[in-house]
Image (cartoon, rainbow, N blue to C red):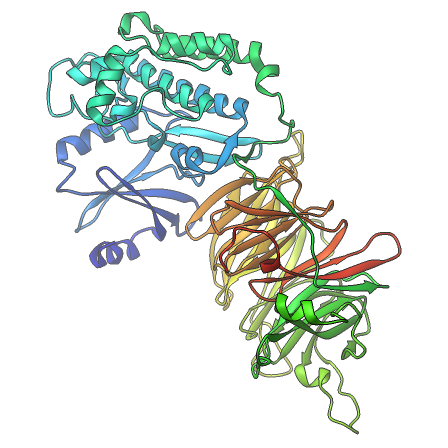
Length: 633
C-alpha cells in the first residue's frame, strides 16, 4: 500500500486492518468503520489497469445487484490519490482456498454452495448481466454456524446479455472454466452456467473435467466429452452433463432451472452422498496421517487432578551440558502451584540408564493460596495467579527460598467483591477485569495499569456480560460476549468482540454469526483457536487483524489445545492427539492417554499431558522426536 493511500485513509471514516487479496484491477483490504465498527472490503482501483469506462461499468453493475449471494457495493470513496469501492467483507476467503486445502468438504456442503452461486447468478441474469468469469477465485465465502455462504464477486468483465459486439472484453476469462463459445468471443447466460457445471464437477470429483495449457483446455472444451466417475450419483451426473453441453441451446434455460434440477438431484442422492459422514461434520482431512503408538519418557502417578500446566523460562535460564536439558514448568492443582524440573534425555542416553525418570520428584517447590486457582500467567520473574475473587503475584524467589529463611508469601494485588474474569497482558504492565454488576447480562469492565501499588483502574465502564476476556497483543483487550436472539432455535446466535486499547479507548466491535465455546490465544498475535458447539468435529483459526476465519476438520472433537513454534497439538477426551502446522494441515496423529485435563509444550519437541479418571491420573512427558512423525523441529 502506498504511503499517500494510507495517509488519505487516515482521514477517511474507515480504519485499515490489512491486505486480504489482490484483484485483477487492484488490491483489496479489510477495513473497519471508525464509528460503527462494521467490517467492509475496501477495493482499491488502479487507474492504469482500470479505466474510468471500466470503473463506471462495474460500479453500475454492482449498484444494480443486491442479493445475499452477490458481493454488493455499499459506497464509493474518492481521494486525491485514487478511488475505491466499499463492499461486503467476506472473512472466509475464496472458494479456491477452501478447495485447495488438504481437506474434503462434506458433499452436501459443497452442493449447497453451488446452489447459492446459482441463486446469485439468477439474480444477475434477471438484470441481464452475464458475469463471464465464474471460477473459485471469484466466489467469496462468509462463515456461518452451519457452514458457509457463497457470494459472487468481481464483475469487472461482466457483460450485458444483449451486447454481442466484439471488444476488448470478449476473450477475457479463465480458460479452465470457459464455455466453448467464449473462446470465440461469444457469450450468454448459458456461458455462466457452463462455468458452474465445471465448478460442480470439481466439487464432487476433486478435480476439473479438463486440464492442461490454455490451448489444450480450449481444444478439450470444444471437442472432448466429459467423463464423470461412477462415484457421482446418476441424477447429479445428469445435471453436470446438461450444464457442460457444447452448444449453449442444449444447456439449462436459466440459472433458476439449473438450481431447481440440482436441488432435486441432491434430495434424491442425499443418503448416498452422506455415506461415511457424521451429521455434524463439515469437512475432514483428505489424507489423514496414520496414528502412531503413545510413548512417554516420563510418567508420574497423580493423586490430585492438574487443570493447568505452564512452561517456565526464568530470566537466568541455563542448559545442562551434553545430552541433558532441563525444562521447568508450573503445575496447578487445587489452591497450590508447584514448580517442577523436567529433564529430557537423548534416546541414546535413556537407553543406557537402568532407572529412567519414571518416579515423581522427591522435592518440588510449592506455593499455597487461600482458594482454588483459576488461571496462571507466567513471566520470567514469576507468575500471576488468579482466583475467583483475587489476583496475586508470585515472585520466582518464593519457589527458591534461601536456606534458614522464612518462606515468602504471595502478594495480594487486587481483590474483588464478586467472582470476576481477569486477563493479564503478557508484558505484565496492565490487566483487565470484568465483574458482574448484579444486573442481568451486564458487567463492569476495569483496566488496571500495574505501575504503582496500590493499583487503581483507569477505566470503569459497563459492558455486556462476557464469557471471556482476551488480550490479543500487548496493547489491546478483547471482551467476548454472546449474541442472543430469543426468536431463534438456539438463543445464542454468535459472538461479539468489543476491542479496547490498554488505555481504555474503544477501538471497534466485531460481530460474528458463530456460536463459540472457547477461544484460545496462540503465539501468533491476533490469532485465536476456537471451538464450535454446532460443529464439534472441527475448530476455527480466528485471525482478528484482518479478520479471517478458517475452519479445520479433524474427525474428532477437540478438547484441549497447545501451541508451539511449528504449529499446534489438539487432544480429544478419548486421547487422540492431532498435530497441525500453522496452516491447519495435519502433520501426525498419536494414540494418546484418555481423559486429559491439561496439555502444554515444554519445548518444540517435548509435550506434557496430565490426565484424570475417577480417582487417579498421570502426568506424562512425551518426546515427539522419539515417535515416527514426519515433523521437522
